[in-house]
Image 1 (cartoon, rainbow, N blue to C red):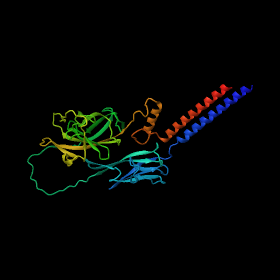
Image 2: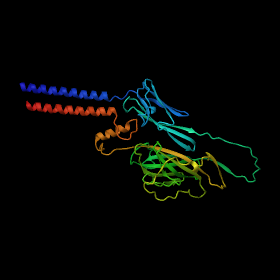
Image 3: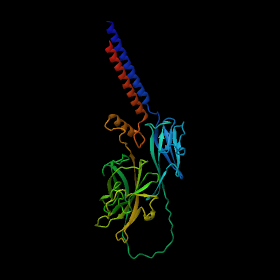
Image 4: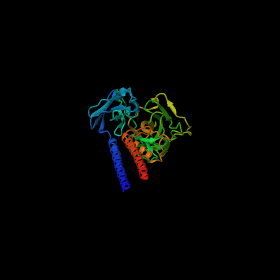
Length: 401
């Protein structure tokens, strides 16, 4: 009778201890899984000034974190730590903090762009943080000079037609020409570079893509298509295909710079008038060699670009000189580097880590885990170890009796 009572007390003790451990583990997970109680309200307010860009964010609660340029957190002039109000912001001069400036010839002007991170925790990056790609365009003013001139009456009249210029764009799509636009991709992922022009008229224009470069936003520029539209490095981009008069494309695989994840592409598209009952001229290119891409020490010269071409022109039924206009198009992509051997993808825990990384507000160059997810994992592992120890002690105690 005495031994039976001891066994009953032992079972009750173990059940109570298990309940306490489970409740403690659950309460620990709930406490550590609470995110930072703040976020950005609405869209950021961007002021494109004459010498700087100012970005302000409205926050739900008083801001206690940091606003900084991505990759330059350690530079004080590129970070703003002001807090205590329900607004956060930063002012970035054009000549510092890796602010990128890209000249555009059509429309004429300059694109100024940067990436700003809003971090709500004073010390760490959490899942409520956000990164914004900021871009301002400064259009160049056209100056017109006029003078008086006397012209005699024309003896021959030409019939004209006003035709608007095609609107062109550059897209990087997932998988093929019908895929979705890709903003984030992993190294080696198959994508499709696609250039298209939309025209209000049919069978009127021809388009040729040429003079393509890629850079990291920090001045490291590499040319991948030459001035004739021929590929320079088959490992980066092969010779383009032209399925229609106003479309070009080619499959490629994602790559990245050694220390930067963002890739900024810029190409030029020459628009010419199509001759009646003829095919559009296409570049005649040899098979590109490997490692043939050219690194540029300075931007391409503008001498080959017709910067004075108008947005609207007149198509003469009798043409003596073929018309050509050159448009600038851009695309960008962020390449994510996945390291081999650190987290095997065939384990459920690795899949959870990867999904947690891509659900975060920031784009990263590797794998990172937010603080709530890591706390939940640690609490779960600790609770399993405690349960295992208690179960072992309970088995030894019953065996003893």
